[in-house]
Amino acid sequence: GIGAAVLYVFLPSIPIGFPERGWKAWEPNWSPAGNLIAFRCIFMSSENWGFDSYDLDVASNICVTDQNGKQFRVFTSGGRLSNFSWSSDGNRLAWAHESDLAWKSISIWNSQEQTTETFFLSEEIQWLYDLKWSKDGKQLYLGASGAIFDIAKKELFLVPRQEVDGNE
Image 1: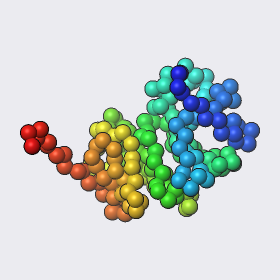
Image 2: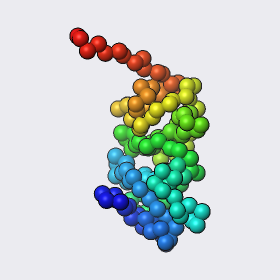
Image 3: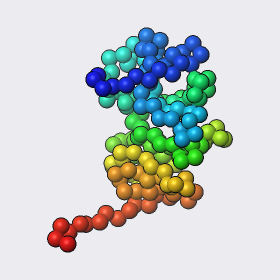
């Protein structure tokens, strides 16, 4: 569409962004160190070729490659996913998973250890725009939900909503 950007990441014999070759990629986000790039991706096939943008979003994966396109990884296998977020040191990438119209888990990939850990939330989150890391990398703020996930404690804290009196 108008104003849309296309990401072309060339991998050994698999250029992402060329539907005729099978891969489509969007929402690129460089790590703070600039050595990795995360993006949404989908392998296009005859089964999903007619998908609209909503369908693609639901069926998309989170992928990461290095700046040379040589270490391409797919972390998810479709499903509704939140926007992903790099930690300030660029070593971890986080995203949330939706199931049955609620956000129920968070996954964190550690690029140094090459491991992914998934945490199941103690409360279902009904609304989630994006994830934001604390500066120290110990907590994730779950966007519009007002919830904070403490990674070390593996606990979700709901921030009480404040009523604002317009007469003050």
